[in-house]
Amino acid sequence: MRQRLLALCLFAYPRVRRERDRDYLRDLALDLSETYGLRRQALSLLRGGLLERLEGPRLRPGAGHRGWVKLVVVACSALAVLGFAAGGLGVLTRGERIRVEADRFTCVETDHPRPGRDRIHVAGPSLCAAAERVLAARRREGWDCATLRRARDGRRAISRRCALRQGRVERSAL
Amino acid sequence: MTEQALFILASLSRGELHGYAIARDVDELSQGRVRLTAGTLYGALGRLAGDGLITESREVVVEGRRRRYYRLTSAGQTMLADEAARLRSTAAAISRRSAAVRRQKPRPA
Image 1 (cartoon, rainbow over the protein chains, first blue to last red):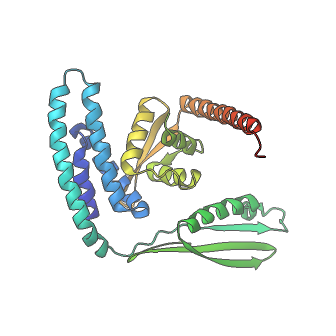
Image 2 (cartoon, rainbow over the protein chains, first blue to last red):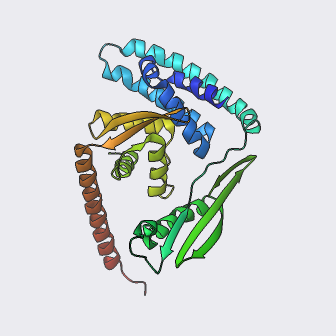
Image 3 (cartoon, chains in turn brown, cyan):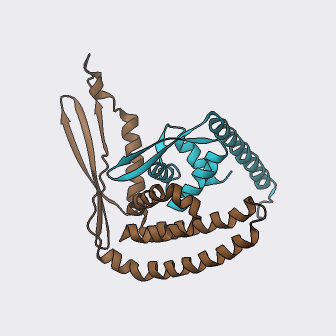
């Protein structure tokens, strides 16, 4: 259903562009919709496609009038798709399966680096700081993060499990 | 150059990335201020590639989805460095002016 909606929105793009990049653009929108929401991606495809058509006649001298006629047609199509998107979004959300997005936020610090085994100690305090910044951003967005600490052989491993509930959709990261 | 384009160049300065990874990185880099959508990202990548600042390196299929990778060109690296320098200079000029205005304001009696 998601794919169909995005495929419909792709009709806003000029045919040449669609023939070249349809699958790539649809997959990009699918990826982004899992993180940032389907409606936003659908609308961005419509806007991006219309803008491309608007810029098209300016780039091709002599094609102005036909370009504007096409634009009107596309605008009408876009309005129809927008109506479909607004009406169908509730159905899409209700019918959505639970998705699990897996990211790993783990860092390892050590007080006792062992000669010849440095490879396992590559993750130092700076990497932990970077992970903490990412986690702080997640928390600001409303994610709930739990902490797991492990200590073994002079190493401290810190893992975070973050989860976000939006309606019936749950995304989680470990 | 738009803020979105500048963040995309900054994101690619780390190395080759695909579109979705660029969007996530820009989100993190801008601390959630710039969130790229499929339409804007596709348009911006197309314009940057057209200007020779980035180039498509390869396309792979991961779990049935196409992912197109991009990398910064040498012109892109130069543009990023120039824009960063310009922004630093602009910020410094504005800070100097703001400080001067604060100094000139009469203190309330």
